[in-house]
Length: 555
Image (tube, rainbow, N blue to C red; front, side):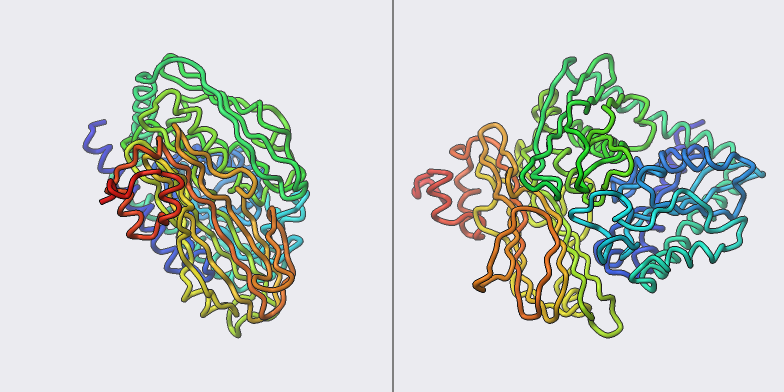
């Protein structure tokens, strides 16, 4: 097939993914979809291999596992045009956690499956022990919500309402979940319809060949990039604060990377055993961390798809935190993802030091279950919290943003105060929170909340015990903090994720971790430090303490 046709079809698929993404976030009912954009939309080949990566990168490797399982459960004769499958099962479908629900629709041409359209999105509540479902201290997956193995919710173009009724009967927020589900099914069906139109225009055989060429091209590009790396082996390890259940016990994450002959092996078998608390990972999430880190280390020009699987090898040990077995809980997986990315990047720095970067602060999550909530609104508030990136060769870390993998959005104050009985009385960057370095780490931010009615607050976060590390002489970033009942005699700073009962009028403060610094702080450009001082990123005291640059050198 000629290169022009391949590129035209690749761009068609990329544009379609963007169109699906746009329509979904504009149609979503919950703030999780409308504001945070915690979802992905994709087009896959007939075996479930991803063609173009979605903005929500860590969902990308999930679809191959999910479609593979659907094809096992439903041989070709059992999959019909107009079907839509649903699943939220981390072990049967490879989903990140129970709150993430996937819908997949087959695409037919001439009576044959040509491709699949799919989407994954976080749901406001899917049952389980706590409102919002995403627990900080669940000890088994059954506490995290209703489990749906891959099954049909539409059959040959006919909706199966009993499946929807079953799902909604297990949700504390059925209206929100119904609205988001129906929007998600609609954009998945739209994606299938658009690809069917491409088959009519270009021919199914042409589309199949283009998909194969796109996948093969990504594999070839990755292989060529790896060939340029020095052969050898590098290892790294890091520690997660705790699993949320045993708060005094850190959890080890480890990787050994071997590069040889244009391929790479990632061995996670030295990671700690699977945990009682909900920070365990399924292999699909580990793959997302590897692909993300590898592409970041090699450079920005590589375009991810599932063809890259042919170049890599993954090694796991059973019943470890990076390869858990049912019924281990997983709802706090994303914090583990972010720590694992730092560990992988540290090992990859051995092979390509020019792309090395210090540790990022960990993005986190906040859930508030209000006793009543605002009239006409959900009584569950769910937020994705950002953090900061570490500094790297030639650049400072970004401040106050979602880190690694997700490309999520931080919910605006105006939306939160309009839809929920809370006031946000402080939202600001924290001076001196970025690790000192020739290239400074990004700054953390803090938010202060005042509760206007009684609520149950669930906080899921990391980096209170082990701050983000600097690199090549850079300082570490600030630790994360969560302070309950701020300004009262009962003020308390918690040391880990947890669930807390709070009263109307009480306040709490959350602060994300700052990014690590890169390089010797004494080598920082005086003009850059002057800019830091002028903007309030670094205080005068911090400048003297961390950089020791004479005032006469600061412009």
